[in-house]
Image (cartoon, rainbow, N blue to C red; front, side):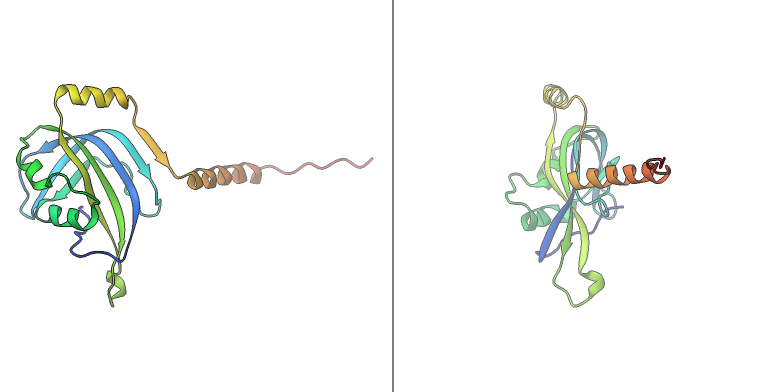
Length: 174
């Protein structure tokens, strides 16, 4: 299910996850204005906010009608219009696709509407066989990144669980 679409500048943003992959374009725009890309292979993934991050996904959904407007709000620089890139794609074309999952905070009087998640496409580029081969050579295995504190917390929990099952032995009194 696609995340919400950003229509105005947020008060604050936090990157929840970052995705970089090779994907396949599925031609056609759905009735609700979305185009779809099937993720074929992850190159990199960063899991930054465990409570909200989507994890590795099989499909990226781009809200084509609002993609360029949202990019203008969130991106530092928007080199090419996403709608222009998509218009040059044909069914089955392979692309390099990078996006961020972003937690936004909006200035609103309604608490229920204060926080939300959006996905922002950072890179969408058609791949030829040579470009794809270079990417796969650069990333022979997907690079999965998890925040250090998450790893430390998981290790501490595992150590605690292992210690919890054993009784401590003290020195024998003689």
